[in-house]
Amino acid sequence: MMLKKFAALALLSTAAFAQQAATPGAGANGARPQRAPVRAKTLTNAEFDGYLAHPEQVLLVDVRRPDEVSTIGGFPVYLSIQIKDLKAHLAEIPRDRPIITVSNHAARAGSAADTLSDAGFKVIGAVGADTYQKDGGKLAVKIPVPPAQPAGAQGATAGAEAHAAPGGAN
Image: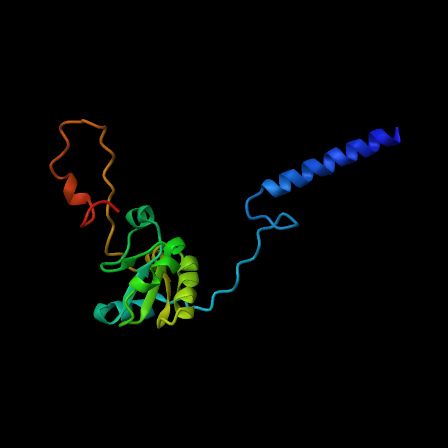
C-alpha cells in the first residue's frame, strides 16, 4: 500500500515538473523571468517629433522584423537591423550621429539602445512605432507586402513592383 502511494506521488511530481519545464521561459515557480531594467530613455512623441524635424542630425535604428514594419509602419529613413543581429553588425552602424532605436512598443528598442550605448554609441533614446501612432503620431512608411505568386503564374499585375520596398523585398 505504502509503495503504491509513493509510486503515485513520484508520478505526479514528475508530471508537474515536466509540465513546468515545458513552459517556455518559465522560472522555478512557473513565472517568466524578469527582464533586466532598461537604462535607455523612452522618448515622448513631442521629443521624438523634435528629432524627426531634423532627420539629418539623427540615425534611426529599427530593430523590428520586416513584417512588423510592413504591418505597423515606420519612419521615412532608418537603418534596419533586427535585435537578434545587432551585436554582429555594430561595425556597420555609423557613429557620426546620435541614435534613436525603434521597435513596436519601445521594449526591444530600449534593450537595443542599451547595447549600443555599451558599445560606445551616442544614444538619445528609444521609441515604439505602434505606441507613437496610438498616441497621435503619424507613421510615414507602410509598405504592403505583395502576396506570393505561384511559380509560373501568369498575369501578375504590372503595379506589383510599386508596392515592394526599394531594393527588393524586406
